[in-house]
Image (cartoon, rainbow, N blue to C red; front, side, top):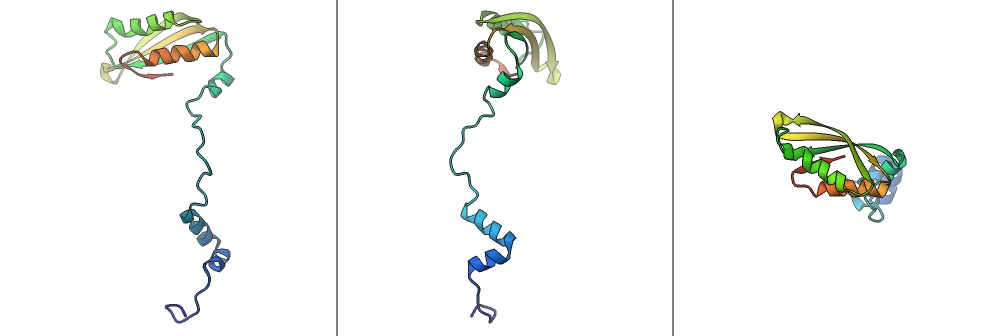
Length: 134
């Protein structure tokens, strides 16, 4: 007999009768956990390669922790892109952010291949002060 004077049912029987309870028990046992670790593809290049046709024009946005009045901000970004293989730099603009603490550098580039685009983004990530690039 159970604590309330009646016969206790087997846990599996309860899970069959009460679907919600059964789901909760399965979750507690870890039956819904992923079977294996999956590769994080969020930062992969598959989406951009599917959406962007290259060779072609690509708009890049780089956020730098520096005031827009500092001429080295845009120059470091532009010089890095000019030195990247398969990248031709076009027009660019500077936009102050967060009261001038950050600067957004918008650059239009002609890029030959997806490998060149990835290499250019990787190169931008190595620059001091760069906090975001997309």
